Image (cartoon, rainbow, N blue to C red; front, top):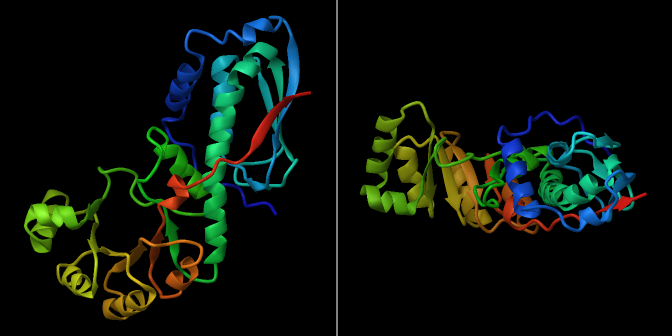
Length: 282
């Protein structure tokens, strides 16, 4: 089954992230690639060793482009498409040395981002019968946050805040340091009145307090299903409710069916297992 065309753009830091990844891997030069005749051109393919959702095409393209612009890639699938074991994802032609040098870095991006997209797609399918939105978190690989959040979108999920600068998320330590929920929310409204305020709560009493101060979004941290259902009733549509903590494939559907607006899942980006891919010279 193929996904609809991906309606998301690669992040602006793509080229710089790829440049850092290549510098990390190549260093002063690929001495093994120098064993290959300099004028040898080859054809290669990247093959799926298991089924998954393809993600990371822009990063793979950038890897080979930055190494040698004579390398050409012919993708047989599009970003966000599903593929099966043994499927050929792309054919590559160009200087053998350059292709060998870029192989691992390109595969690393494809394997990692496809893993995030695949896991996201699986969970999105499980809750497709509900109106809940599946969100990621900031629990990402350092340096790859924008890439992994792109992969979540490729898998059909949505992004929570990108970083610390673009949204308020007032958690228990912020509340303690500010001197209470009211003080924290008032400070947020003064600082940036147009930015939505989200508050994390641990129980129904905390929910009622967050509602009383006009929180836009309330994160229900580690609520069981019964407490989530009660929270939805108490809220009565006044704020958006986000369930977080203790979410896995066994609990996801029952949480979604309580009527919360969002479910955030850190495992989308921090527990993903790289998809098995291989580059083979043909």
